Length: 329
Image (cartoon, rainbow, N blue to C red; front, side, top):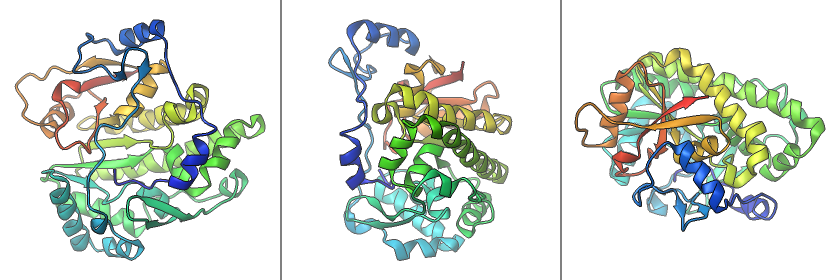
């Protein structure tokens, strides 16, 4: 996946996080929450008693095709950015654009510097050392030239199939400060209230970005939270911080979704289902649809459908029967 990853820190986090496993009785409860039949083609677990948290659609792009820091300056030019998006679609075998050209544009706007290590994007430095340093940050996105370029591209190419990928508040924050320190903050009762308030501030700014993109003509929004799913932070921390801020963002965007659909990645979908924050229903299109983009377009056309999930926009050929309608409880 084209994402800003923290390969060094994840090795440390993996020794501290709670890996979520379920027993047979909990699997049965999960299946009830999924509201679907148990078929081999859909089961989201490995074997019978462990939830499968693997990402089904890691992009395969040669290391030399990944840009370096200097490349980011080019995408303030809409024409250059359009060429980059077209080339990325070609490299990954898709006929639709995924904006922005890399994941977690928001963190770069807020000051995170990243570099290509040949495989992933990794943070070269963090903007802040603790939550106190970030609480007074201006989380405005709309005034930034990179954001304005994305909005301009959407308006110029609204007839072209495209998906806007946004980062969930927790994963944005985990790029601004060391994610190991952030994990420790989640365990600190005194910092709980401050952390939730900061996540809401980030979500408010993201909701305004999403609103502007929808008004420019985008009809499909996809949310990712690569460092904030339940398999990484554990059930308790996910419920209190990551999942809570995801739901907060979804609700903030709800008034703008009359002719659009808000997509949740598969790992977010599973996390919210397992923590009883959402319920899902199989999607049965009124007519045969040939590809994933057709499914998303049909959902966006239906004013009754606001949220969808259990699929991945980065998969070249998602299994269409995995498409589900999501409703917040």
